[in-house]
Image 1 (cartoon, rainbow, N blue to C red):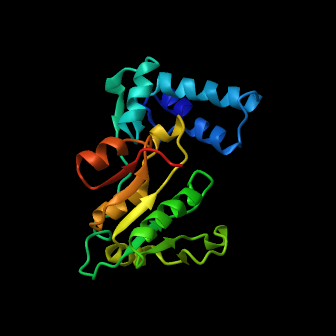
Image 2: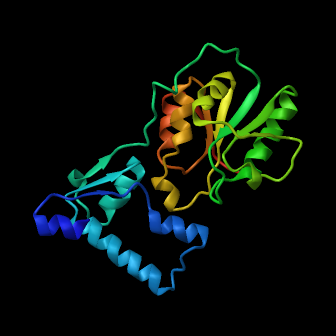
Length: 219
């Protein structure tokens, strides 16, 4: 894309969306000692240096890029967006439900979310933990949680019945650039969100706006 832009003398926008290379390192799909890693870093440096504008998901990533010499005026923060014609508060009776929605990749801390739910369950026996995902086979059989596979259009109704949404993510350098779509979906449906510290801009956003809880330590 950059080569074509230069050839046609057009402006080039780099939609970075996150620290992609560092995410791959976290997942173990790229090794820092490999030629592949050096190749991706080289390409990343070219894109950051020669793009007319760079789009990132978080202010935390914006700050990181400025520290490596990228002019702040070239960087624009556009968080993950939500279709508010679909995700909106619905008139449903709230139930004692903690809900997770989305895929369950290696970066998501299912064990820690279940531990958090167990703590809630000790205080309020009536609570349920529901996971809405397209890959239910990734969850081992467990009587403490209920796993459902639902269509995208059905998610807002499920969220509108819940007490809160949840999403714990592996904390690392890469997580500073993360902006979970599920957070916006939950907030758009009128329910608070619980996540762990050090993920994107949520430390400031959730507590400052009083729309959720940030768990400082996972143990």
